[in-house]
Amino acid sequence: MNSGDTAWVLVSAALVLLMTPGLAFFYGGMVRSRGVLNMLMMSLGSIGVVGVLWVLFGYSAAFGTDIGSLGLLGNPAEFFGLGQVLGEDAISGTIPTLAFAGFQAMFAILTVALISGAIADRARFGPWLLFAGLWATLVYFPVAHWVFAFDTKDEAGNVTAVGGWIANRLAAIDFAGGTAVHINAGAAALALVLVLGKRKGWPKEPGKPHNLPFVVLGAGLLWFGWFGFNSGSALAANGTAAVVLVNTLVATSAAMLGWLLIERIRDGHATTLGAASGIVAGLVAITPACSSVTPLGAIAIGAITGAVCALAVSLKFRFGYDDSLDVVGVHLVGGLMGTLLVGLFASAAAPAGVAGLFYGGGFDQLWRQAVGAGAVLVYSFVLSLVIALVVKLVVGFRLSEQDEVEGIDETEHAETAYHFGDGRPSYRSPVRSEEVERRLEGSNA
Image 1 (cartoon, rainbow, N blue to C red):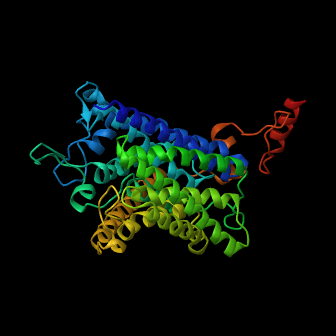
Image 2: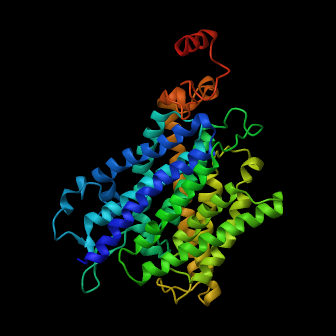
Image 3: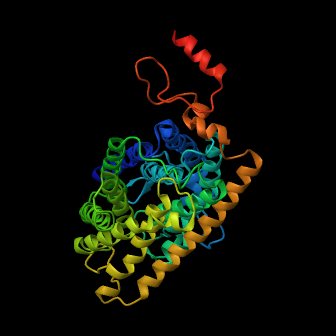
């Protein structure tokens, strides 16, 4: 066990957990004022549900010994409750296995929370928690096994525990979750949007962000936490972590500039929302590629993805799906771009030691990246569609039209985010009855 590596992974785990409240602020600022608390709650709820499931059986399903040796699912009972990895001899590499389990728990939490932005303002909170638990169990845990679980070998090189098929048999590169996190969440978001339908009034009334400083604060927290997300995935305080940190910085910077350039050309001005969105797009894109490219390659991946995502967010208007906060346009498209561009910009000089097409490696890595990305996209979309339909049919998923108009914060949580002196909510609903208005006036008097 190495104390420096352990300390770095523990700190990185805390940084990744911070990303979920950061995401809550990022999403919360982009919705209207009467829906900000619900966005915060959807992220917080993800922490509660997924955190418990991960300890019970999620870690085992993702990183346990493969069932059937096909690389599809770990044994959910192998580390049930994590009691088996409490001892001093439970070590993964140079860190305690429990530190690794805690670090990976934060990935599972964030991935579920990412989905919520697509269905802002119209999903009931209880059914969202039910969906979150089912989706984590049936989609995230298996996909994490495919991508993150590497074969365990003895000193002679013999495989003693089989890992996931994408990581080992396909040998696609996904250092920190371009497929398992972002393509996975983006595909699920698209499925949920199709099941729940459009917000009332969309697209004629798309709704403007109510608090852009919240959006920037959230983007800043995400960027800060993402250094733990990516560099922490080295699982050691070493040169790989340093390369990943620099690539995460420079790709994100280039993506922000790429997004702003598209805005300037297309709309005539660069916006604060565009800068924040470009930051997130760059972080998404470099996540799978950060160990396999040089800093120059990272700049190229960031700039290309920032521009492409800036264009992709408008596809929802062309195709008519109401992705409220552009989860599909940023996370699905950005995850696909970052994963596929590994096959072009990977350099043998980087820690992963693989050459892409532009560095003399031919198409070998590119097709591996494409197969991995496509498999996760299809699996996540189909399973998410089924889960969402089951939740909708069994308990109902969407708010009533009246509750949506009145505001999801008040109807789902009996709260409003902002009060201005007199204790009254910051808005007056057009659907409130005269009796309700008289009671409110009487209480204030």
